[in-house]
Image (cartoon, rainbow, N blue to C red):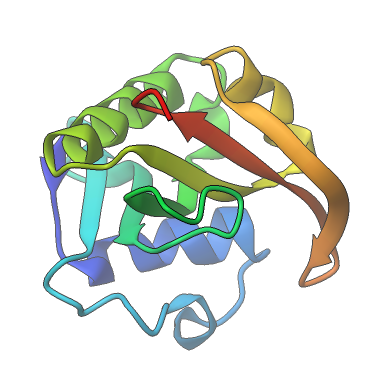
Length: 145
């Protein structure tokens, strides 16, 4: 597990989250902000096989708390359900906690809601579509309100 530049995340974001969309379509406007964290797990050939981005960003669900948003979490399809995503999620949670985060939130794909719930995240509110894909807000409280 290592902190990486945003460009390391683009290939997995494109292939796993956007069905092979051009890399320019998976770049976030915040990617180059120095406060943003990009983490990756690499395989034995140094290729990224899991990535996530964490952005300091408020949420209306916890308006008076120090919040970070997780974005672009992707795991190589052949390695999903092998524990890599859990390790990556645990690492980014601890990294954000160390930076003072009181709450984490994300737009969780409906197909991944069980993954988040098994790790203590709550699913909140009604579902919605992000680029045609069903999502729900997922939230993890790191500190008592």
